[in-house]
Image 1 (tube, helix red, strand yellow):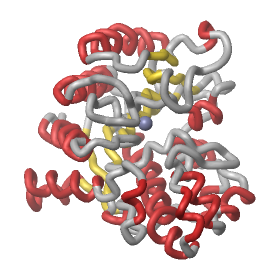
Image 2 (cartoon, protein in one colour; image 1 turned 90 degrees about the vertical axis):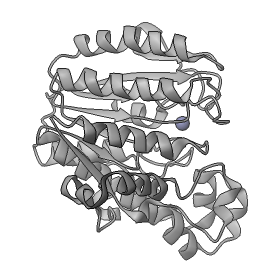
Image 3 (cartoon, protein in one colour; image 1 turned 45 degrees about the vertical axis):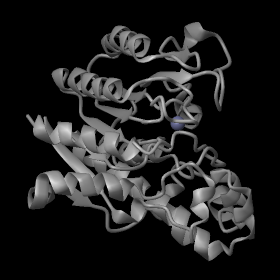
Length: 317
Ligand SMILES: [Zn+2]
């Protein structure tokens, strides 16, 4: 399968330094991209697409209520999504440009990645993965439900049918409560989610037998246990969901031991191993795949993102 990268420098956040009030590394997308351009030089343009335009409110209405989209014109709403209370005093146009527009560019990137993936590829959007966004509100630094937006747009265009199987493999440290809220009752969407149940948004409620692949982990879980669990459970999940039309891989790097928000204890090398195992598992089954970066709050997050992108390109089939 072909490997493709999608990116825009507009994915970076920036609000006059105020973004430093959150552990998110606002420039990590550009830093990851810089590593890749160093490695591949001009050649990078031959397998990359740059996002020129952000997703619009009209487009986003396919998954979000108009009320929610309109509410983002209030600084206090943006402040609550990104959990930086002082931002409610910042003029809205500054937050639009520095935060909301960034998320809209990355959301457009996830849709483009999904389009490219359907063309028999693994397409890596160097951003996105906003798995805490709901139809009527955002939380956990997630404004827009980019994966649901991509899927619903493709369904509307009949490029993905409602009977087609679609998978979400969410390996961010936090449970993908937003994505799940869209598809919990949709049997055509299979969800695999290894998450730390002791951090936000906590243990999934309900009968675990109803969602056997949304698997809680305890805080501090180490590399060996994590990798063993992944290598046991992911093949079972893929066997239980044969021949999907499309898969999303939410490759959050906040499972890294140094990541304060993820609160797991997985090593840098084990995250490389995780990413390669997921990619090879999907490649060997010829599953068109969208990769999105999701959370990652350590100083090494951008390097892990670049490692995965580099691996995809170097092993391009
Ligand atoms: Zn996370």
